[in-house]
Length: 471
Ligand SMILES: [Zn+2]
Image (tube, rainbow, N blue to C red; front, top):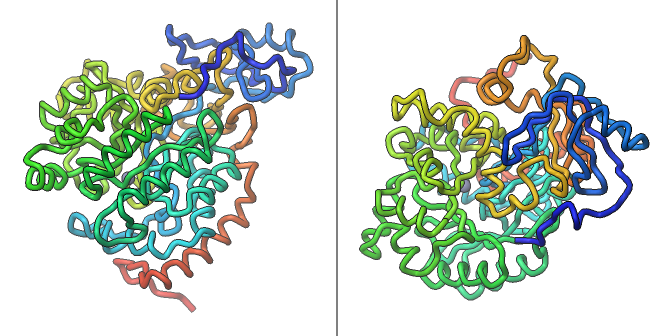
């Protein structure tokens, strides 16, 4: 996906930025951490990674982000993020609902009432949250009605990611349409956004059992034809296996395999309830999985008993981490997801000798990038790659005294330590604040948009405990 960028093809532009003086967790093949290292940026790519002293001498005119004493990592990858719908009603959907109720009583009406303005605003909100937590790449999850507005929101915030449009062909629901029409919408977005840029086009379906065989097969054909990705939801609970078995006589991934849908172009969101044969299919076809552990815990979906993600990783499968929605995990923070992924892998297998912080941080960076087909461009700090860089502030309580670098990144801290973020060479977060968007104005706009959206959708925030307005 996208032209391969190597040192030879990196632009010869004057080095403009030097992130200097930190412990640089490169995530290169040898997993080298350069203590007192630096990353030099030319335009949107990394020009050099090395010693601070040496690079400061080599690039005396570069603007310097002083990362002395800090930890510097690649920008992190969030492979499943709903950019619209939920951000305006974040943490509003009750957590004591029966399965499905949160989707059909809340998410569907909220999405149905979303305007283009709401889509762009939501995408800015979610992008800003991701960026301030050190996430520089997001894969939109397949529920956007106005993809060009949402893409505009991503660009305003300055985040990298993929965008498609709402795709399902069930009988009723917002934005439902016959398969041919859904495919035409997908084609338009993929062709308009192209690939290799900051926001690129993907084919996105809602998934589950909300797509006909024609739509499933057509979407995979489209993704393969355009050389781009396809993502859809599948099997976060037992519901998808039950429905596929009833409708097709096969489990979901066996059915997708029979339709020719599985393959390296496909990123399945969740894949929690997989049986042995489906795990084998995932591995044999190099199908990727976006693993969103907080969502399964928030929604009580059974990952602790059913999840096979750690096994898939250990057997060479392609897995990335995701944060899902603002009412399913709620926080867009890949470091929290990484800690939970490692904790679940260790505890559910009662095995403290496998799948620790280092494996989890690989999923957050280089392995996550590989799962979404972008490891030629992002996921590590190496010459010629896109300059997506995060500086973690180590002056906080959580980082003192300093311990093993990756243990402290994953187990000891979270996105709150993120101080500076650079995406494609552009500083987008400085000193913990997003500099591309006026946050006070954004929050005021979001509060007003939430009031209007809830009124139009006929929803109300149901405070469970009495909230008494004081005089
Ligand atoms: Zn989702």
